[in-house]
Image (cartoon, rainbow, N blue to C red; front, side, top):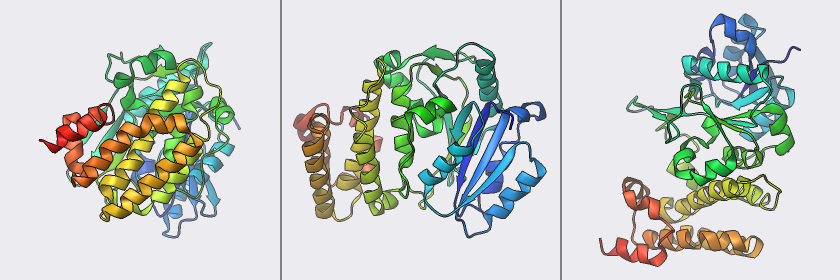
Amino acid sequence: MIEKVLTIIIPMYQARPWIRKCLRSLLVDVQKRKDLEVIVVNDGSLDGCEEDAWEYVKKYPDMFRFLQKENGGHGSAVNAGVGISTGAFVKILDADDWMDTGELEVLLDELRSFCAGQMEPDVVFSGYQTFHVLTEKTERICAGIQVHSSGGWTDLKELTARWKQYRPVCTFHGITYRTAFYRESCAGLPEGVCYDDAYYAIVPASHAKRVFVSGSCPYVYRIGDSGQSVSAQNRVRRLADARRVAQAVCATMQQSRPPGGQAYWEYRTESFLADYLITCFLRFRDKRAGRVQARRFMGKLQRRYPVLADRMRGRYRALKCLGFLRVGEKQLARCLWLRQLGQNGWGFCMWMKNK
């Protein structure tokens, strides 16, 4: 099969309400379709969404492919798709999200230029958009720096030195990998769990030597649905999944990385671990049960990864205090002092108590 410029992998499970919109958004200009491969991986769906996917495979056989597999979770579907992808680059698109078609064409042009040139990036960070299902409000999330429409080259050392500016795009939704690099740096995502996207955004990217920041914002991330795995209720219900992914990420702590790679790994990992603690202290209705979960987690972290545990100590104490004060997650998110979380330790907590 002729190599494509970009492979988009769509893990699909019970996605009939959204899959048509998702696939329709990938119908780029006819001349650009030769560069795009779309692999829909049906992860054991039972709602008939595979019928909708097959319509696109039949109508656009040079662009769409279909892979049927038994249910194994999001990470399992991604791993299966990566295994058969032919594109020089690979990007993951969840079936309940979609692409901004025009912005995708911009990204395709950039990737094509890399394939025609002498140097290809290991990872491309692009902006993305959020779409709130209740308000229908769209927001563009971009790097907080001046990026020309043609994008710009950097590396992890520079990226982490300007972390506050680059951090918004260093996410699952903003990442496109060079396929060969991804296969070399990632043996596979954790399977049978939610939140494997954190592993996808942390571990492979921390090994990148060549980084390109795109000016495009192709991915449209649907938010505001209580049924999503990122909702507060589901984060509590699936805390064990987050713990398994955290353990998988932490197990890569000692891997050899290029300059800036370890700092990238630490920043992204600490952010993920902090969200785990936020779930324990602020999202649990049973505050005592949440504190027990957090204490056990920090105990294991201290025994296995003491350096990382020490770096998380300030966040742990601050969130524990906020939990006792019954501060909710929404209250926390609205406050500008969230940025100081974990940096001021107990002084931060006492300041909060006196507000």
